[in-house]
Amino acid sequence: MTANALALIKQLTALLTAENQVVRLSDQTATKTVRQMVRLTCTLADDYRALVNRHMLAAARVISRPIYERDVFLLFILHDYGESVARAQLFYHSSRLRQYLWTRAICSQPDSFMDREPLASAFAAQDGQCWGQHHMSLASWLAQQIDDERTAFNTVEQRVQYCDLASFGRDDRRKTWYRTDPEVWGHGPKISSIADVARYVLADQHNYCHLVFYGINSLFTHGYYLPAVLTDDVTGTSLLVAGLLDATVAAIFKVGHPTNRERRQFQQLHHQLMEQFKAQPVPQWPESAHPDRISQGTGAAFMTQAQATLDAYRWLRKEGRNQAARVLFRTLNEQWVSVRWIKAQPTEDAQQALFDRFVLTARLQLVRDVRRFVGEEQKEAFTPVIASLTDALVQAATPVMNQRTLRRDKQHRNWLAVEQGPGKHARSFRAVERLVVPHGSFAYQYANGFHSVHAHGINLNLPFFMDDQRTPIFLLGDDAQMKVNDQVVADLVAGVE
Image (tube, rainbow, N blue to C red; front, side, top):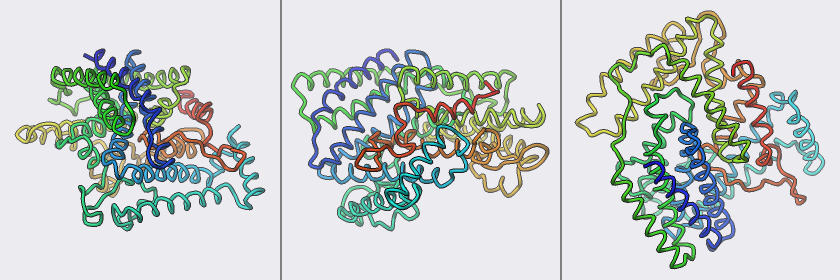
């Protein structure tokens, strides 16, 4: 079944790649945006297929999430042809705005990397160039670019009036660039989240696809320990990736110029896909009889998973599959910071207690995600399981977590908070990374912040230049070498691998 889905992914990717050459919209920026989105979708789909073929299945599921997000955004752009140009422009400015914001955040704290070469020299050179050309620091120049992108975004939004600008509230990143409000726009559905977008463009009233990629697969994205029944089977994910590509081909054909042969080929592939969906086995979920019990081998299994993520990253880098490596880099950072924090606890008992919280948190999230898939009559069976996991988590956290922090952690996701007792104390992932990773402040901003655009399928991989001489902007011109990523990875695994 998986092999058939991978064959479909390969053929649908080839169709998309061919048709993408002739895609034209009535605006250059919009055309460029759509083409880049298709190109990156095809690149990641090929990387996904390669990872599955090498049996790097957890890494493949990490890569599948930005395929989903970018495809859903692309389908939204193309869904209503008369709105395609404006929506593509909004996505373009949101993408650039977010990358500028994270670059400026890093450049505003140069002390976090000034003893790190060649990063420090590259920053100093470009900061000096900025003073010479623009009479301001690099951080101040980036602030101007941020203002320009936000203004450009607002100009498009005010022209098309999909929603009131005030509805963005504190969304300075324009993360919800897809917002529509029928009371302002005059028609269409109310859209304020990616779940709304997915339901609209996929005609998926139960949002099954969203629940898979934003629910269960997000646990892979954030580097949690997961049971073998999830890590060893990607049949369902592969079919959903093929389904997303199928929908994208149909959308691209509407703005491209497919030949009759390409149309016939697509019809055949679509028919094969529908047959595979009919034959798909019922998904298997982890046994939940005693989810709060953690076996002796769980710790070793998690280290095996962490090592597998590192191996997959190294293989992607070796093969020059840098877009996928950037996506996986963020997961690798979260996973190995978790490893280092657990090992940093002062005693074996404290290490085991923190690891138990880590596993219980993952299980609680997984059970909640699985509950969303079942019918109403089955949901009640999950209530005692969720209660058992919650009680176990609270009991494990109480000796080391302040009551105020515990009360505020309503979803019970802050497994890493250690605020009492011997050893180092931290309450957030950012604080933990500062404690346990060399240059941890920079590593956090670079991996969790700067690379969030890659992990969420927002990047366009278009160049960022400082001047007419096409000088790449600091950090935004490292797509080919990825030297900074490799340095951070070396710090993450040093002494632990």
